[in-house]
Every structure is written in structure tokens, then in C-alpha cells.
Length: 240
Image 1 (cartoon, rainbow, N blue to C red):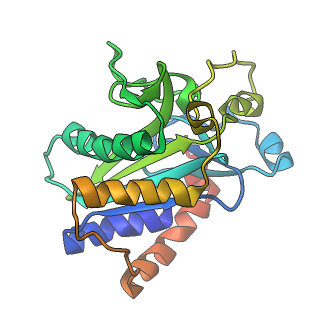
Image 2: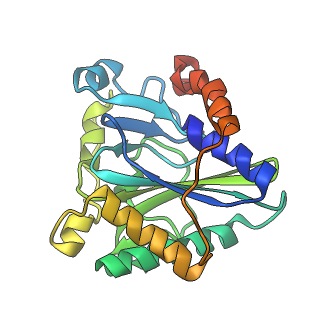
């Protein structure tokens, strides 16, 4: 999270867009920026199962980073620009990559707006514009815009362990409908590098043929280190 925010600051300085694709060193529950979490999730159950917790700077609802691929896009943006246009451009890259892998994704068009922050897991239902397979969410994404830059986070499910989030809550909750997964769509579970290469190929094909790997500058590293303690601080994680 700290590196993504530091890359957002880089986008302000450089005017460049960066797509980052990554995995997690341990299972981690990430909470949306404005989601209520204090008193909702059982901290003892999280610790007992070896699940870390972090609060994202982006919105949306809780999801478990484990059997999935996480991406972030950081880019400059107009202060009053329409975020849905950026969302649509990123969706082109995501859908191109996933279709190339063999996943028949379509853009969700439910009549309702995106759900309000709640304890309902992120993958329980698709919001307008999210990528689905057979009506079930495969990719969950959320944005944050701040001072002329945007950050979009997203999670692409490889396998389904999102229903386990319900077991981490203090109050009983119904099991959500199973989401789509790459294993179901492809009949196999692709590794992170395969998904990443498909995404990078989509960037070079549809956005920038000269796109290159990023050498993280010392300033980005310093910014990330300065931000890191906030994401480690329980006062941020459990602030709501």
C-alpha cells in the first residue's frame, strides 16, 4: 500500500502512468478506505489464522489477498476529471489480458450504483463496470483521486477463498454467492507471472507500444518508507 501511494506521488511529478502487478507475502485482509471495520472483524480470529490486515487508500469493501493477483495503476489526472473514463480505459487492458488468457469476461451493467461501504465482502456481487464471468465478479477494483493523481487498485481471483471472510466477522453473516475465478474460467490456475505478462502485453498493444519496466527511483523508495508506518498503524487500520 505504501509503495502504491508513493507511485501515485511519482505520477504527479513525472506525468507517467505505472501498472504494478504483485502478490502478497501472507494472506491479508484489505479494508476499503471508508469501510467500517472496528467491532466488525474478529482480530483474534485473524491473528489465529495468520491473516494480516491493512486498510487501503482506495475505496470498496473487504477482500482477502491470497489466491489472487493484485494490480495497481497510478496516473496523473485532471482534478475534476471523470474517473469513470479512466476506469473504462483500465478495463480495456484488464479485459484484453484476461480474454487472451482464455477467460470470457464481460463488463457488469447492473442497474444499481456501486454498493456503499459495508462489511459485505467485495466479491459478493459485481458493481457497474466491473469484470465478470457468467454474471459473477472476477475482478474487483476501486479508485482514489488526490491532488492531480489517481490510484486504482484491483484484485483478480485465481481461486475462491473470499467466503472465508464471513468467518472472520464478529456477527454471523450469510455466505455470499461464489465469485468467478480464473481456475473455473480456464480449467487451471495461472501463476502470477503469467497474468502479469498478459497485462503488460495488453499495455503495449492498446496503450503504449514503448512501455518499459520501471526502475524504482530512490525518491519513490524514500516516499514509500515515509508512508509505511501509517499502514502499519492500528489507528489507521481500525480507524472506523
